[in-house]
Image (cartoon, rainbow, N blue to C red; front, side):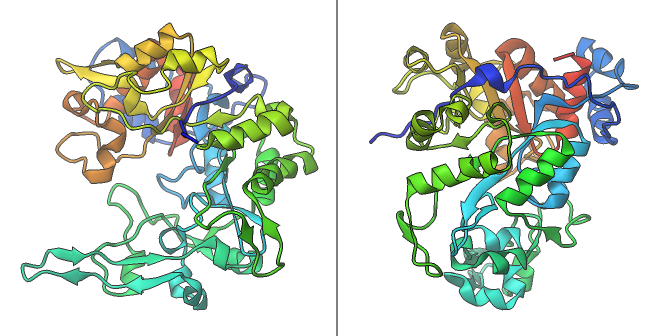
Length: 417
């Protein structure tokens, strides 16, 4: 079956974006103000400056991507709490499973080596690919980078919860496990990475409910073959079992379906929810991860955006760079974005604040991913707000995932989104 990422059910997703009835004690910190100061003079800067005294309320336009992982270890209690304090109205738990089939929050089933302290514990013995040090060429360049692969599917729930979260990174030049764990990007920080509290999916539901935010769990593609036979219980766990179990944990917690936006890159998962849990499935998000030409992202793949709309789908969610392009030093909507507008599709996007400093000459490798179609128009850190404004006012997005929700919360409140 051909897999094409799409998004379902935006009608409920973005109703009542600003939670105006909630207390206005949201804490944004200095970053939004720093970014505004770094903008060139103009109407947008003046408008944003005029909102400096708030008040600021929680908003569903601001979606906490794995919590607040610009500075806090992702998918930890501390990261989720930080995102909620910064006004994110919706917070994401990426969902995978352990050897005893417990659902836990991790971006990938196989990312424990980079996102936790597992390599510094006896549980390193469970890693399917033990730490391998980097090797070097005669000139000192890296021949083979350091690596390790450690999966939740090799751990029991108790073992998983014994680990501590760290900033997600691995040092490619490492020759020891400890050095491998010290790979945090220079534009992030280890200031709050002193032992993040890992969480089960059910624990995240209880926490986010207590924080007054809504839910967008992503059913992550398993790293193990499915069906998976638990080495602990002997139970055979199918992909549909996995999809259902994620929904069942919200039902068990008494969470209204309208507050949950399940995500998956697999259309099979979304179709399962639509057929078997339609009250949740009508809000399901199937993310658009197809490959596009960074020089001019266009609606040139099958299915087209119009074909997606003709299926009854209301919302599409590509990465932010797919929605934009550069024209004579200006950021403008891409042909893809225009096609989505013509097809009358609502749009959400990902991920703001995941790329460090915003100048073409300092963005490196992976950091360029989210800005690859507009590099020629980036001159300063304040262009984060220039980018967000084009996405909002010209592309017409209904919400955006961010690694630092305060940046989006400030903008959404100022623009009364």
